[in-house]
Amino acid sequence: MNKKPYFGRLITAMVTFFHEDGSLNADGTAEFAAWLLDHGSDSILVSGTTGEAPTMTYAEKEELFTKVIARTKGKGQVIVGTGSNNTADVLEMNKLAEKVGADGVLVVGPYYNKPSQEGFYRHYKTIADNTSLPIIIYNVPGRTGSNILPATIARLAHECKNIVAIKEAAGNVSQVEDLYRLVPEDFSIYSGDDALILPFMSVGAVGLISVLSNVNGEMIQELMQSYERGEVQKARDLNRTMVLQSRSMFLVSNPIPVKEAVAKMTPFNPGPYRLPLCPMTDEEREKVTRAWKESGLLK
Image (cartoon, rainbow, N blue to C red; front, top):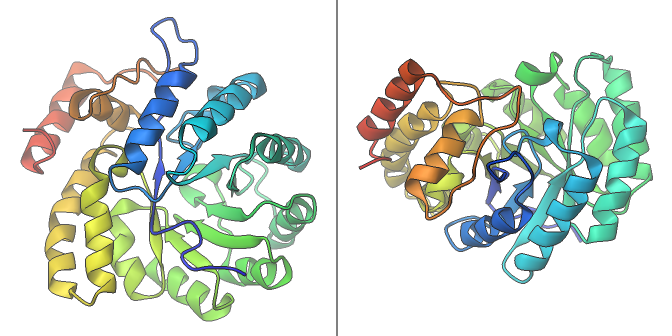
């Protein structure tokens, strides 16, 4: 039986920790995952865009998934990113996700190939037919170059019972309205943009897959719970602050600011980036730090 929201209201798209030599720090990432689940998150997403997934090998992902799942057992659900622009690769990654005991998979729309809507349908239908795990479709045209339309999502959601949710990051409220109208009643629509969670919830979204919650999950959770309780003015007031905090994380490409924020605002040090990501310039850091202070994130 499906439940809504399927993975709870707040899913943190968490950063991945690396040692100073650039090697994977799976143990550190697992400790941070447990901390996130104690600080507002209902579930966590490992190896998404924020987790620098494109620069990790299959073996590294296996180690990372295994350690995070072991460390967080009983605390919350673990979703792993398995998306690729090669359908066959997704099938292999989903086998790994099943083997290590993931609770679900996030599958981004194929990037670079720019498939038709029928191509999107066949991609996800093939994936759904070859795994028993719950699937979240991730629609992010700004990174993939193409938009998965609500009619395509609805077709998949009605035909594939294990396609249970979407991370909608097209930045378009009317697209969420169409999704809500077309998808099954028990299908979970998650915002993929922190700053749009309140307007998205007003037209049918049930939760958020968040970057900001790496450092301020409790406030985002309270914002969403306030809205659900009908305390709309309180949600608006929290949103006023949250939007500024969220925007501060995207003044430079994600996850560059948020990874530095984790080092400054939590008890953890996530370590360096992997190329092609690199640290902020002094000018960028000054702009981002100013935004953190003005929004109340950094004291």
